[in-house]
Amino acid sequence: MADISKDDLFDVIRHGYIWHSVKIKDHLSQVLASSANQFNHDFRYDSEDNYYYIYDNECYIFVFDGKIEVRCDRDNTFSANKSFTYQINDAKDIIAAIPALLFL
Figure 1 (tube, rainbow, N blue to C red):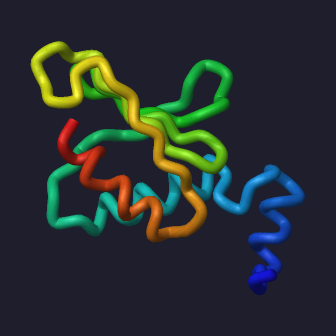
Figure 2 (figure 1 turned 180 degrees about the vertical axis):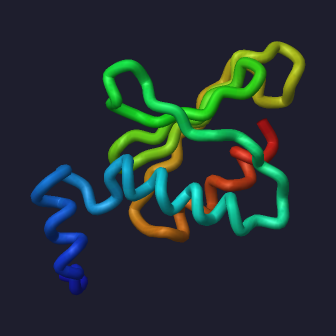
Figure 3 (figure 1 turned 135 degrees about the vertical axis):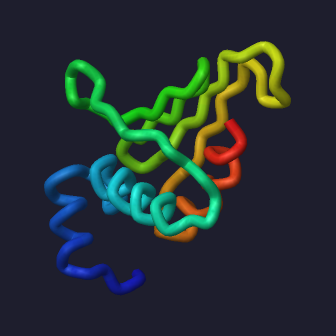
């Protein structure tokens, strides 16, 4: 078994995931803020504070425990009416999802 940090172990105990929604949201915000690409959206909470999302012209980014989901309800794009789910197991998985987020 791989070594796990004390903070990650506490995250698993508290949230059930090492990469829980708040940790993903915080890391995603840092990566997007330092990106050369423009991404000027704010994270918002749903009414139950269960997940974070970004909305832009019928496209949504949902951040759940352990995953990011990208949905596009536009009819005139390559990803029209599709959803993509990215499992988050480490920071590299968040970076791998960035291209989908930038091209909404």
